[in-house]
Image 1 (cartoon, rainbow, N blue to C red):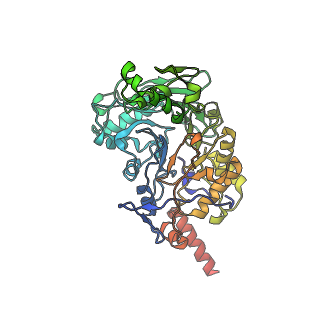
Image 2: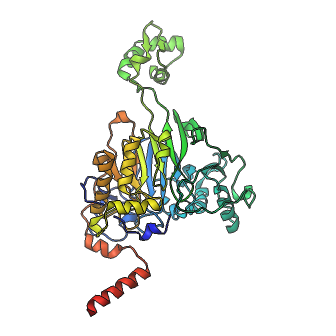
Image 3: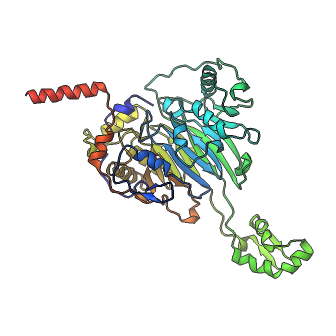
Length: 493
């Protein structure tokens, strides 16, 4: 977070339109037309979020930068892996956002922090308290928290200073030796060792690792089975990190699913199983032939299952083509993420910040090149920069987030313009580029499902003039005084 995020001129050229926010769902399951818009709309959208049914799914809890506002929370994303939730960054107010959507705090098992700026970590101590209220500590392993060196000290000091004991058991794993790649600004020195010792009364458990970078300069956090948290699941998933350019030591994360076998073709195997029903019961003790489907699905390449009557089920006939595992890349604040290419190339979804945008619709002047130069100097990105990053990663879809509070999510003309510029520079179709809003649910489907990126209906048309009157961001008292003086001078002339 930089002060410039809130006040810098934030420019974008007009472009095509394609994606719109969602209908708000009423308590009884119906929909509410929001033509009579007011400040509550952002909250209504948030409360309308529901899960998609995909086994991997992103929920945007906070899509804003610098500070939380009534229309955009500070940075926070939730990734659902089966029934487990992983959070990426926890800006101030994230615990409020969690209570407005379908993400269950008690099912948060892992938290990943990209860097130490407040709009990405100030919400973490309070969030731990919320998680503890519904978490069954005796049945679950400790919450795993990952982040840059110094995160352990931050939590210890915050919880001890406040005397907070209503926290879950947690373990902090720190990524050490993160390089500082933005050389225009100096960094404060971290203490050589935590000034406060670990104390289990405040939740922290032993076992926290100091994770050193691999030979290629990236960090491997873990590589394990989906169901290691005790909630079931198949397959393997890994999380790695790599440095990005920002005004703090910052990393981006790549969540990678291992390749999977092909889907089972029931039509190819059920007739053979039914033909052997009696023999299977008598010789194998199998009452229901369908119970063998799981065993057949687990057949490796070239393996076979011979049935009692001599018929053979071969893996290449019973299963479709193998499926490539999905990959999700989540970047924190950055002006250059090229170092993440080593672990993030070919991402199904790239989550990239777009703090500042050139928007003539909002009266911006000076051009995109000037804006990009200013934005880059503060370690941030524009939609154009995010689009180029998506192209270099070969991403299948781009999710833009971390917007200046200047860009209200209900200003569909502005947000479409931002999406359009990013799409133009990414080479992606418009329906694969999405400007995030709080409460957005983004399923990450297997490629062979041929599902659209977003399957949500649009909002009703909005009264832009009334909206602008109600939600014009506060530009500060100094700016207001200056504008008042200028107006008085014009009237006097």
